Image (cartoon, rainbow, N blue to C red; front, side, top):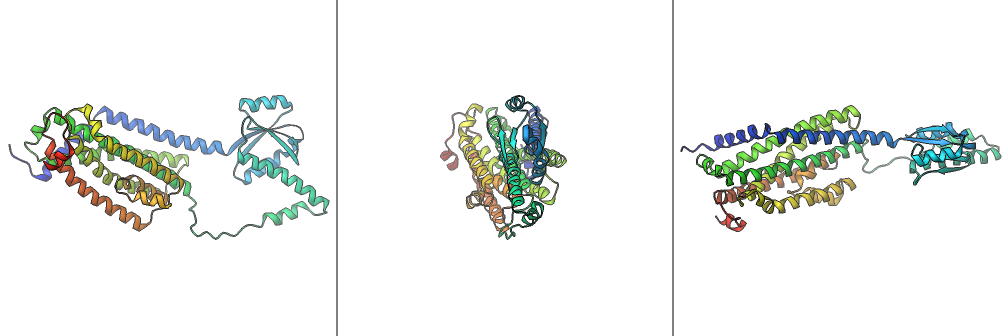
Length: 396
């Protein structure tokens, strides 16, 4: 049988993977499930942001007179407090118990008492403190024959001067949210489609289909075509999720469609391709060591553990301090760069030299692992039976 040239062989294998995978029910269902989860997260963030700024407070007794002050102080701190007049304190306490009120406030304006169920929100406590403190201050100023309004105007006009060495961008929270989403999607996509490469290799090996395919193409061409094909399937899914998520986040106000958001997504797609080439080659090579699907997990387990531990530790570092030394070091490790570096780019924490160095290290590792993976795959894919030792596959 005539052997195909390298480029055409890779193209045909890639095309076969694309046509097969994109039409499967698992791809459609998986995309829909991830889309629902992503949109649910956006909706949750919207609801959480709205709920965080809204409080319902019951006022009873003398405290009824602070309603306007309470709402004014809350507005100054970016909160929204709805006040309800309560004539029966027992009824008010019951509403607190039922969760209808965040707190029931009683007592004089200078000595307020807040009744709550289990804990009082710190922002609400601060507003109540400010109302009581203002009342006490007004009394002291009046006793000193000073006009409280004039004194407070002077006090409120005094502010500390800003001199930030590394000022935090105004959209820091949006950047962090986007970075977390990018890291999560890349992690899920790489581990999902990497496993598909391993399972596909084992399936072709156990069914002897690979013997027919290798009559026309070389082992490295078959592996490369499979990796590229499944990588494009994953990329298609990522583009769908990214577009839908960006539109939903922009429409709900969770994110604003700015240059950094678009740039972060483009960086995410580039790092996905590098990360997938890196990991999928390993998955494919390791998958060729076994002949049964039930043995697949035993050979790819170690690489899954590396991905999971790296993602969890890097994710926590990213949330704590995207610009911290530990986060920088971890994001420069080639095996973790495809997940963490695009997230740091999204937050604005990654510098140009860090991006360049991580790209160079990752590309170098991709080249090395592609060579090693092709060697392992070529020496193992035609051997049927018990699991092949990695050392044997490397020796050939």
